[in-house]
Amino acid sequence: MKDNQDLELIKRIKALADTGLVYADDEYHRERYEELREISLQLLSHMSSQPLRVLHDFFMPEKDYPTVKVDVRGFVLNSANEILIAKEQVDGKWTIPGGWADIGYTPSEVVVKEIEEETGLRCSVDRLLAVYDKRMHAHPPQPFYIYKLVFLCTIQGGKLEHGFDMDGASFFKLDNLPEISIDRILESQLYQLYKMVIEGNMNVYFD
Image (cartoon, helix red, strand yellow):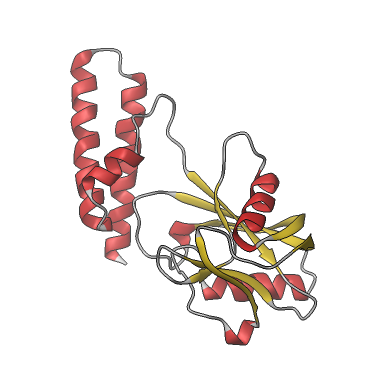
């Protein structure tokens, strides 16, 4: 728990440094904020086991007020109430389809695109199920601050086959799940989402 708290403090320091760089009006303050940003990236590298070079490449200098990243995912059931899950190449584990929100696409357009790219199935979006702040759940520590949007989707067509960047796609019963990629989704969240859908709970979970 302490490591997670320390990681969140480092993210806040980086966000303050980025904000300072956006609004700094003289070279003196800019140099101080750049130094503070570099220190925060070094600490993030240490805490998250990500190489400093990777963090430098990922965290381009902010030109506007820094905000969180958004991960968009689709929750899909078949007629047998089995959950659509795809296998990630990165860690060899399984997750509901989805990914980073793309500029120029609405959240619902992103999730439809991601489901088809990762599983071959064409879907429509029914409604928003949940907005998760990853900090509030038992995901492993990582350098990015992330909101996760999960949409309930219905299959409209296509053929079940995994995409080029995935190692598998299939339907699983809730009581027979494969090894879950907990960086992307938690079993507890799958149980929560499943219960919401099966019970017809129309509320949107948040935080």
